[in-house]
Image 1 (tube, rainbow, N blue to C red):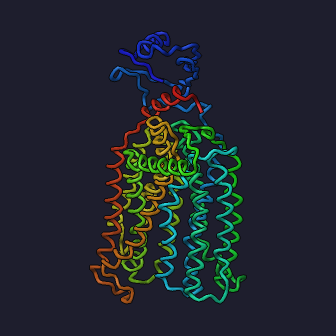
Image 2 (image 1 turned 180 degrees about the vertical axis):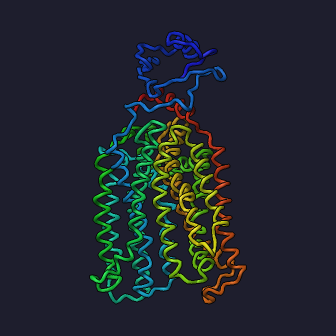
Length: 544
């Protein structure tokens, strides 16, 4: 809570109290202990924890106290226990393993079952289209559910077990099926798998937004979960090697056993956050209704869902975050394969075997650098702010993308490795900062609407990411064709094709990253505003 003043340079709490009463005469400050005040507002008593900011730097700005962005510190009561951060991070590992496995194992349908690659692509994309409905719907259900175990954790527990078991069924394909029958079988089971996956993932994402009310602790939480979640992408590249081990009859048999391993691992890690973590808003009820008939209740829920969805998708700050993520992540995804093509056909004249070690080392350096970037972002953000951290990290990754134009050298092919740690600043910072910033958006939304919609915001955000990824993968193929690349020519690709591949590889992510920086410049929730919003919320509903 911040008190109006004219000169904030030398004020004690008595002066603050007097000036507060001038603006809020119906409110009495009953007792003060340091920066923790017991406030009476009418018949209500609320404890306002000004101690959440342990080093107040009060100064006058437009007649109101503001807090210096460089002096906010997290109160001990707002810190999340490290074992709880690890528990939430295990949910990230589960989420990423399920995502990586469902994508990386699709190659089995082509290599082991001989299915047409076009049909394989359809099986990978059609279930994702259903996310446009199921993601926001699950977000709404999670936001409004009231159970004795909370509104998030029961869905997480049931969802991860169901998704894991269905994944096993998905890859235990009956023998002797025609390609048409296999397509139908895999599509139907995939729809159920992704539905169960949504039941786990959407509440898990939303739970992270509400675990702490502190602006900086949210970054630390997202840093831990992103760090642990990245481990999935060091495991997933080994899936193909596992499925082709000599101990299996063939790749299809290996896939069936890998599905069991993935399922067991995901159940063991995925139930941990559901069992261990506590929901801050488990009992939070923002709206009630007196609808008695089934038709009236159905209409109320539909209209309430529609209002919440519209409120989410028109939120300016949320659109800035979703748009920036779309640009950074999908600018990278759109040309993800181009780098490999450039290394093989430009640097090594079509010799994929010679290019293999360079491709491998680039990926390894990027992975190691991503872990380091996550740690750096978690350290840097509380000191310079979330937006400034985003600007710094995306600017560094932009330099990395642009530098590849000069680092692609036929004489010194390994020179391009210099760009790897720079590019890692993009994705390494993105999902550490975005989650914490969406949590801040949810607080502002509650102040404006009186409702907690972490599930809706999280589901729409990730659906935008998934939609963009699907579009990027599809458009990437067309973009490669547009360069004039022809696989039948091998190492004798036209100069124009090689030039355009390098140009697109550099230009697209560079331009999209710059656009993302301009979008985040319009994001309006600063550190000062976040603490002001929190104070107003706690004054209205108390601490949760």
